[in-house]
Length: 198
Image 1: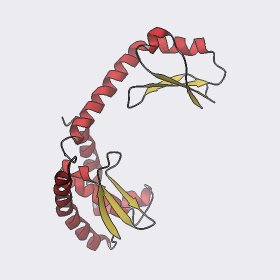
Image 2: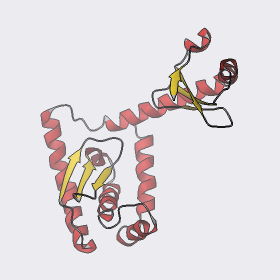
Image 3: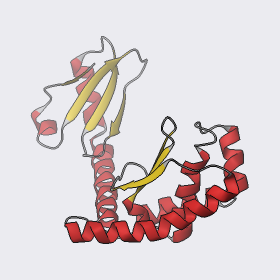
Image 4: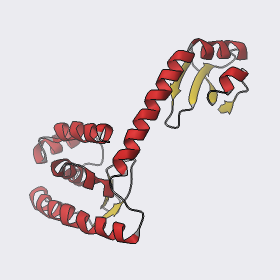
């Protein structure tokens, strides 16, 4: 169970910290996306020891928060390249998405012998695509428009392979090897583009 712990005023003025007591043998911490610090502590460990641990790592926290902030700014700059705030912008993005993705779906459906019940688009940033195995629909992020075309195709094939194999298991990877042999390279390039673009 997590809780906010009143801390030393010097620490409190710098950052927000959440302490979670767990069945663990050691203290650990991580920086989350908004820059807050999450500390995991063994159940029963004294408050003073937790505070001392945090203070001992203030330099690490400062550096880690800076890097997290920089990554988040890069991420925001990447997604901001596709404006979707007006109806006209959204309509134009949808037109481009259909022109890009629908031929890919048709081509791979014939090759793979499987067809989604429908393909739709959302401006999701948590994942590039999603397959609903129950209704056999596929959702593609509008932001694939920011990727190289072959990386967007990798997203499409990835989700279509889930119509044949829901899990990311050995069979799924074998399907990806068969229908999109460059999938590992595409995944690396997608991560590189999304993380380094400004």
